[in-house]
Image (cartoon, rainbow, N blue to C red; front, side, top):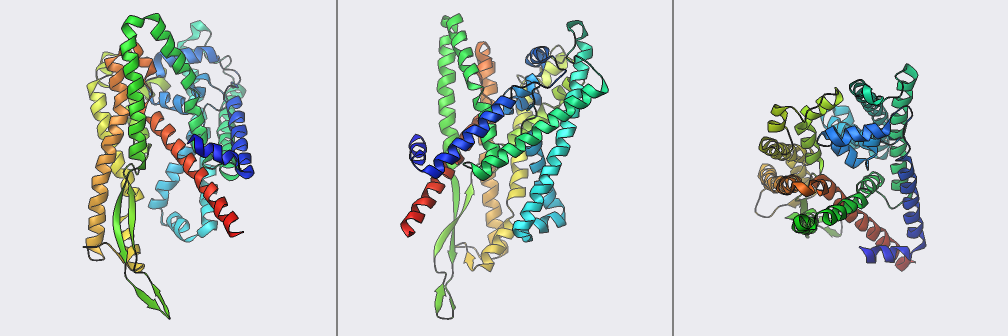
Length: 436
């Protein structure tokens, strides 16, 4: 990775793209610490650490680089855009007009879908901004003795807070698009990567403080956590790059005086084909009770039923969480891969899988292969998601050091994609120079 970046730095065009990407990320990080008006951010951060860290809002806070808990301008971060992209992707399958637009519209159709996604992002930004303001208002009532979270509850202050959150989410979307167009690519993922990595210094400080504060009790758990995280990163890198290659052969055909086909290739299917989305969906559903309680301003840590059933440290929560991850993995694989369509495309292009006749036998074989790979990928996601939880249960003294499996998968995945994108651009420039 370091060698790739060093070689890319020697190319003037790529060096400009890298510097542009760093400049946009710097602007984003500056906006990430600017609070919205009329909010007691100190009290909000304290409430968040005490009551909301184990809800889905804790995931949002990690994705935003702790901006969500500080009620800053970019508190919503890229969540409205991610949710809008997922919604439009699902609607593309459910609505025939959008499906035709995505498959047959070409470049113009892609631009229209991107425009619809932008409008949906703004709409979701307004909705999430209003929900955030409702949460602030409820906590202002419950914590009135401390001055309240909201400094004022007038209509204009509410409008200012909601519009600030919405404008911030739209600006984050625009910054990500600038990185994609003028930077090294994949702008939304780069912003997400910067948010998660920004929390690492505080984690290192916490690690050192715990180690110095009680060295005799914490040295072994700390070493186990660090070694475990390194092994987990290596495991994620291996699975992320792993794929099942289905052999495909193309029959020879003569067109005029030329012979086409007659070659062997493969159909790659990623082991972790759904990425981190099943974990995000599963965590959103599993933490729904705590999230609802958080938005209405009710404390949940003192409720025995919640602690025994829906707390992240309970066995029921872990089992339910794992089942949801597996279910969402199959759901997303069904959306992403259509065995019948893949089989028809192979037949149209004169391709076939050795040992299977074109048509239904081929589609059945592809479906069975995808189901097996999906199960393995779902188990992998479940292991990654539950390891930090189990580690926190085993070593309560360093529970704050546990990095969520979601964050690790995102960081590793974005790092690998960025290196591959840089290598692809370097290869393209190499061949261009060769042709010249």
